[in-house]
Amino acid sequence: MRSNRRPSSLVRCAACLATAVASGLTFRRLAAAFATASAPLLRAGGVQQSFSSGAGAVCQGMSAVPGVEDFPGVRVAKDAAYADAVRAAWAQDADTTSGGPFSREQLVYEHQGLQLHGCLVRPKSGGNGAGVVVVHTAVGPRDLVLHWRAEALAALGYTALVADMFGDAEGRGWEPAWNEVARRPLAEDRELSRRRMQAAIQALAAAEGVDATRIGAIGYCFGGRAVLDLARLGAEAGARAVVSFHGILDDGGGLPAADMSGPSAPRVLICHGDGDPFVSAEGRAACEAQLRSSGARWDALAFGGVRHGFTNPAQALNENPAFGYDERAARLSWEAMKMSFAETLSR
Image 1 (cartoon, rainbow, N blue to C red):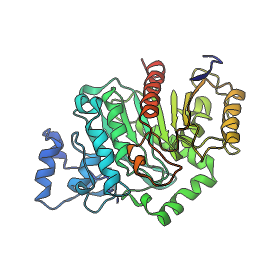
Image 2 (image 1 turned 90 degrees about the vertical axis):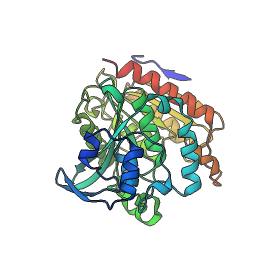
Image 3 (image 1 turned 120 degrees about the vertical axis):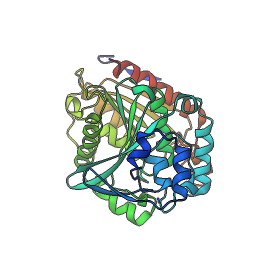
């Protein structure tokens, strides 16, 4: 571990029936009930939403380990094999299996007129009051692995928001043509990307039971770059800490970087596989140089020979040699995140 110590689906997230939630029905009972009934339309916060048992498994109800078959009409994975790999790891996660039940609810918010479809995962018994935004990869927010990670955060006591950077209610981010259109503006306008990140931070900060002064953010791949761009806002970021998992590393793409040395600026943790072909040596060096020049408090974990996407068990199935799952790197990077958040998000 290298440390700079300068100051040290197709997925439609829909609302479940309020009466069912209020009565404390478990997900399994909800799913059984809705499997035999048509999904009504509800209106919450002025947004029309449709409910299905599949959507409820992601964004409503109590903890479960869902699969592709639980999401009729919505997409949460590349294919069934991808979903099965995630589900298998999720089911064996001691933290999520013993730390629940967790409640889920849809959180719709907006940025510049675009409706964004977040999913809020809450710990049992109120948690510790801190919140963490979870930012998706390039395929978008409707990804089973994100909801597993959100539950893992809830098991630690954090309220987690799976953010939506694309305006994707249905998992269309898995479709290359749709994805390109949704992602291009954020890739071309990094300022737009980080302001959309701020919208997610603000949405979580406004959620009931969340202490707006104790918020962190984690991001994967595309989301890793997004949280680093957020951190470059310094005290204006609205987050105490950010963690990039196999994120795209560069100097910010021309974004002006604020002073990152103050106590209100986020602490930065970068978890990177040095076998990741999407990050050049020059890009990594430029990222680190920018953090130094801004006075950031930052740490970096670099895993030798580890490829892109190393935290996702489903990447073991990926035939593209650029990608690969690494259990050790996934475990150590998560432990490093836990340490960072324990230092920065405590009361």
